[in-house]
Image (tube, rainbow, N blue to C red; front, side, top):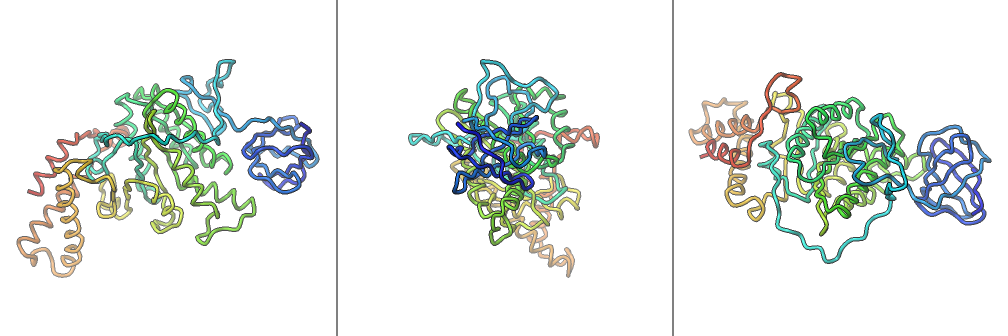
Length: 435
């Protein structure tokens, strides 16, 4: 194969002309320079022009340099050796340990989507207990489904995710994945230390493309993590717990790429491919006859606006949505869950049982009444309410306090011991309040 030649360079976008045969979409090509700069083919233009992305932000690439095809896609190492390790989007280690290499190391193209099975039958829903009352009651954690934790900055999305990892991953069943997309480096380091202290790294794979990385790596890190999760699901028949923090940053990275690629934005100001970007990634977080992928995804809400197009696009792919509220956080309630706006399509008798379902209907009715009574009380005072309304208002206040809970992962910060409440105890506690 004849080499290509760099024609234009603009920030991370490099156009390469191939006279002989154009590379494939998603193929990795290498520049003939001192650093052997790695480029990823993003799209193809007429005349043998490949539009490539500079994966490592290497600015030593110059116009006129030759570029060699590799005939390979973007591959990361897979297999048992990846468990307990931290990688970047390119599969390179971030934990100061040697890279996974050798003749027997298997690799996988992250952009290659595995074939779907047409004969797969959905098994009976299996509830995974989290020990967090508000989640187990309002958004039951069902194996193979997707849960979203939605909220603005600083309302506790990462802390709640870390608590879920602590409570669920410690069972040792299956394999846990954590993917940091465009978040703070400090949070990634704290999570690593927390998992290490609690001896949970032996069942965990971690990928980070934090906010210091370029948008190419931030947009690819989730795909790399999903690719490895698919490998363990399909080849090792593992059940996967997949945690992603933060899915909004994935869209944001794609939007930045769209801008430098000169794509015309969609009506909401995001990239024109926002729905397909989200859909392709979410569809890969699926279960089949080999194993399941249960995902927990945090979603940052810009300016606390739940109607943001990116938030809506991600939200439509989820089975359950936990909404964290700044207003609730200001009242000192942790986790700061907005009980009214938190919803789940899995809260059905066939999944959670009749007792749980009936209680959920009663609780929601009490909370709705509480919200309407608050406005009345602000004007006339609580003593002017009827005895029945006063009783319901008191019950709702007790419920709101009941769903507040101390976290294990914040023990070192506040000195308060964390709580784990079983599902049966949680249902009994709610029943005592509302009966």
